[in-house]
Image (cartoon, rainbow, N blue to C red; front, side):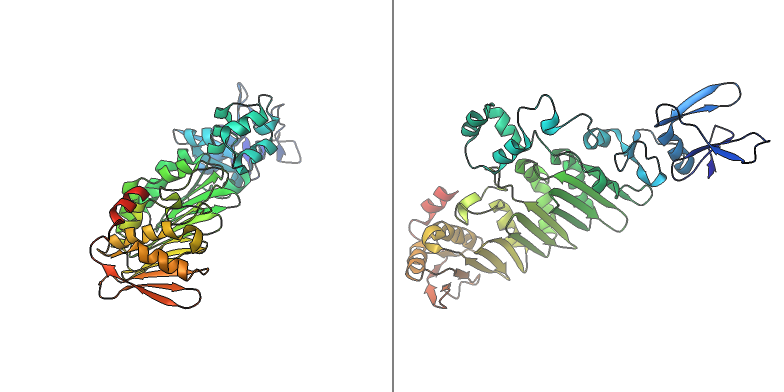
Length: 415
C-alpha cells in the first residue's frame, strides 16, 4: 500500500483499491474508499476542497510516476473497472486510436449490411465482385472493401496484446490494420538483428529484436495482401538481402516464408485465399493457377546473386533452389504447367549467363512426365543441364551461353 501523491490520508494498493485513513477513534486505521457511481473514478476531500480523478490515473501516478506527455492509459484485459497495476499500460494516442476503437462492430452494428457469414463467403469465394454484389444486394465497392480488408476487420485482441505491454521491460505492442504498422516494421527491419513476421492464431505477428528491445505487432489476418507487400519497401528488402549470407523463401499450404540468414531475419506472410491478389508479381510464372503466392523476380534474382546456400522458392511440388550457383526446379504435373516453369528456368539461368533450349526442356518433360521433374543448371557452363524425372531417369540437355532461337520472345511474353 502506498500513499497517493497530492492527496494526504489516501492510499492505494497494487490491486487498484483506493483507501482512506479513518478517524483516530476508529479501531481500524484504514478503510476502503467508497466509490462513486462511476467505478472508474474516485473523489478526494482534503478538509476544504473536494476533487475527483480517474482511478487508473491515480494508480499509475502512484506506482509509476507522472505520465509522460503524449501517452494514455489502457486496460489490457479491456475491463475498465480492473485498475490493477499489472493491467494498466501506457501507449501513445495514435496507438490507442487504432488498437482500442470504440463502437459496436460487425453484424451487431445497426449500419451493417452484411453478416459474418456473408463476409466469410465473400473472402472464400472465387466469384467476381459483381456476381457476389448482385447475390448479396450490395455494391461492388462494398465487396471489394471486404476482400481487401478495408472493412469488416476483426476487433482487436485485447487479451492477447495485453500480455506484452510492460513499462520498463522494453516491450511494446500494437494491434490494428497492417497499413498502420508499416513504419514500425520498416524500422524493425533496419535496426534489428532478428525480425519475424508470422501468422499465428488468425493474426499477423511482427516481432523484431536486438540486444535491448522487442517490438510485437498483432494484425488481423484479413489485412490486404497489398498492404503486406508494401510493408517493407524494396530498398529495405534489398538491404536485408544484400547483407544476408543465405535466403530462404518457401511457400507452404497457407503461408509465404522468407528467411534471411545474416543474423537473421525471417518474414512469414499468410496467403489470403479469399482475395485474388498474390504476394508479388510472379503469380503463375513458376507454378500453375493453384499456386499460393510468389515474390518479385527482381528480389529473386538479387537473392541469387547475393546468396550462398539458399532456397528462394517452394510451392507444393514446385521447388526452385540455388546452392553455390546450382539451380534446381522441381515441377509437379509437368503436362499442365511445365512449359511456363521452363521459361522461368531459362530466366533464372540468365543470371548465370546460361540458357537452356526450352524446346528440349518441354520435350523431355512430356517424354518423362512424372510427378517430379528437376532441371539443374551449372554456373560454370562446363556441364549440360540435367532433367531428372520421378522414375529416376536423367536427361541431358544442351546449355549455351547465348539465348536459343525463340527464347527472347518467349521471355518478353512471360514478363
